[in-house]
Length: 227
Image (cartoon, rainbow, N blue to C red; front, side):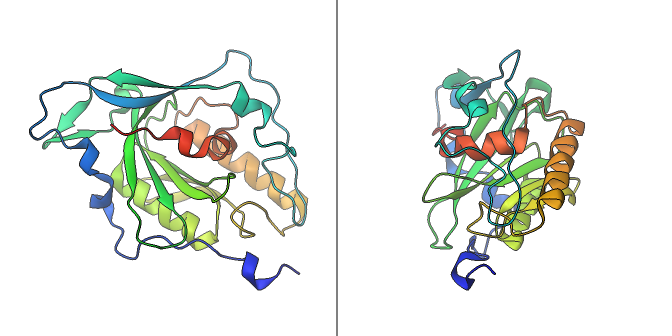
């Protein structure tokens, strides 16, 4: 049995709401420059097979090293983009493969929410939420809609960590990882099924990353740059 201190250790801000994803860095008020900094994920043409590990106390991220092969094969870089602007804020625009990314501290300490822009995911709609694998650990949400991002963030928190795919306010698939937000104590067959489900659901929303939720979890804070 897992120790109590390892279970359900994610706490997001109590006052989190859809407006939290506007982000002061995305405000265009008073800014003379037309471009903003964004993170770009360059998807390899032939991604290597991603290791998958299940079973009690095992992480589905696989591997013993800090960076699984899929993460190493993704070029993550900062680029300048001209954003789509609505009501004075840069917004997600799936038609241009531009999405919002939000990074949360997971201890409920009230720290700032880092909100920026990202490209390379390919989402047509919805949002993806993950608890990241690198200490001290964060919750990362990527999405096309602020309300779906909110649902994804709260779903990750409610599971105590893991992977979730949200569309139109509904959780379409989830893989709970309640042990430190990294591991599952469920039977490995169940974990493998949940991993397959979240990958399929993300692909159905247009995401073109190989093993999308696990890839986002390994990249962690690399997915954010100040706009």
